[in-house]
Image (cartoon, rainbow, N blue to C red):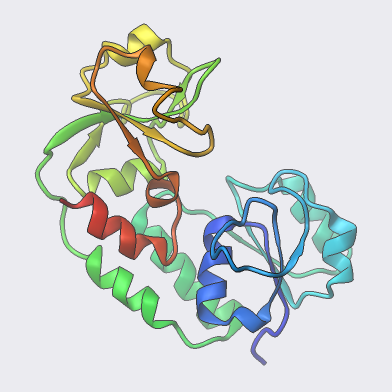
Length: 233
């Protein structure tokens, strides 16, 4: 039977579910900001969800992600009889595979048109590198996108090579001087998780900087369509 009540603890997947079958989405985190019109019960944050509120919603399934949500919360929900599906997404192809599993096997919904459109846009081999980039995601202390990340894979597929792709950690700490001297042609400053702005971030570097939408480089879902159109040129 198709799932009729779904709680999402992953902003990207919340947007995907709302674009596919909004009437089935009954709960989401405070960080689930798309679509702007989303009107569901809020269950607090991705790292501190209110498990009692989630249980009270009587979901057929709770959707989570290995990186964004805590294993402890997943285990506690499962121990209380709640079905939880957990994705692990580090590449663009992995996001499509996860959605195939989610729609086909977990929710038992028809695959949406946006999924096939996004899959078609991102098909094909890697383009030539046109720019080398560094992508800070936090400051004080400074942290950057490293290897084995969805963001790094997505950027490489539009010709942007992450200079920290060979780092030891997925999100390494780095000094400003190191980022400035990393060999990046441009430093991309997203507006999430840290909200970099024209007045907060660019002033730290001598390397050229570019403000980008965090949603376009970190989210997987309908945003992949917009991301391909905006980042490929």
